[in-house]
Amino acid sequence: MNISIFGLGYVGCVSLGCLAKNGHKVLGVDISEVKVDMINRGVPTIIEKDIDTIIEEQFKAGQIGATLDYKRAVLETEVSIICVGTPSSPSGQLNLDYIYKSCANVGKALREKDGFHTVVIRSTVMPGTNAKVTEIIEQESGKKRNEGFAVVSNPEFLREGTAVKDYYNPPLTVLGSDSPKAVEIIKEMYQGIDAPVEVVDVKVAEIIKYVNNSYHALKITFANEVGNIARKLDIDSHEVMRIFGMDEQLNISTKYFKPGFAYGGSCLPKDLKALSTLSHDYYLNTPVLRSIESSNEEQKRVALDMIIDEGKHKIGFMAISFKAGTDDLRYSPSVELIERLLGKGKEVKIFDRNVQLSRLIGANKSYIDEKLPHISNLMVNTVEELVEHSDIIVIPNSLSKEEIEKIPANKSIIDFARIPELKDYQNYRGLSW
Image (cartoon, rainbow, N blue to C red; front, top):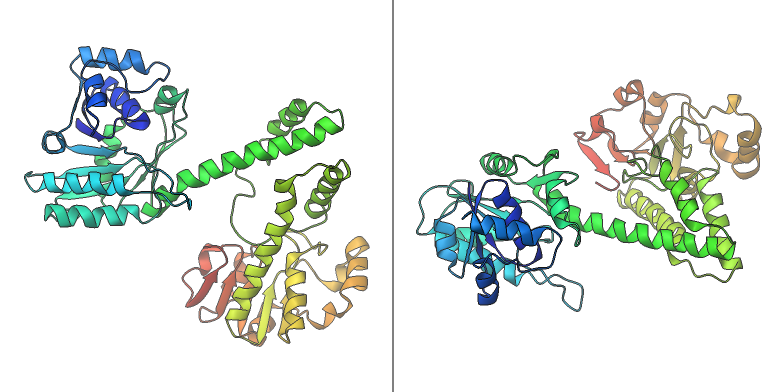
């Protein structure tokens, strides 16, 4: 495949060499004469393990070259990959001028080209950039999207120092486009890369790099705060985090990574508070740990506002335990939400198959007797009773198939658990989706 790469910086240079090594003919494009000259001498534009050898080998094999002429690059290739910089402004917003200018040049060149052309946005960009780029290319080329050209969002997951290794061994390849034809072309371009290909909505592809890197930053700061606490206690922090990382069922896994309602229960709030208090006792500032509870409180506020915004008076809750599959009401965010709604004069009814007052025993019964003695007046025995009472139904936890089937399709629903069967209901709203 003949490929052009716009931008011969870090991502562009690595992509140039690695694509060529995989058998493609690759032409780099840059406004810098110095970078173009370096590639045309078989010299990489960056310092990175193994890339010098790859660029030299592929140059000698006649697989790579570089030019200042963007028209030549587009006319001689089937795919153009945009790898130009997206620097941050002082306010934190991205400067996408280089992206827009490069794509405008691609569009101008396409005026002189017959046949389908695929443009790949490899640079890290904000959601909405793909759509904007498509408009620019349409205006400059006079061609229609997905007919004369298409745009694919394809974020890179390269780390400096291991970029070549990362290129050939990515965790996955993400492609976002509304053109199935373009997606198939890029899949073919990546043949030989041993990684699953995920074809997703364009905006998912655009935002995922920011989510990845923000989480990586969180991991580092979390580990550092744990390390600071451990040091004060004369504990080996690396041994603590080694044991932490061995739990691949919860700690290093997809568990808890589903946006929805706030956490609760008898463990998470208590143990988080204990660790935060411990750090405070040793005069340590642990802002990440400290902010977790405030973020959780903010999610409760978001949920409350969503219910209030519906303007309904009679509200039904299907499930109030702190999570599905239990009758534990201690520190349940649903109970707290109900208390706030009652305080605002709302009429609330509750159905929870696990929370039946006649079966409650032990700590949970004591908790209700002491903290929620009025709950028996709010409980109903069947889904049908709840539906009949409610103008709006709030669903904090997952439901059984039988319970879902009893909810009429015309009911107003606020879903905290993302139940797929409800998403097409007439008046459906999801908490974080």
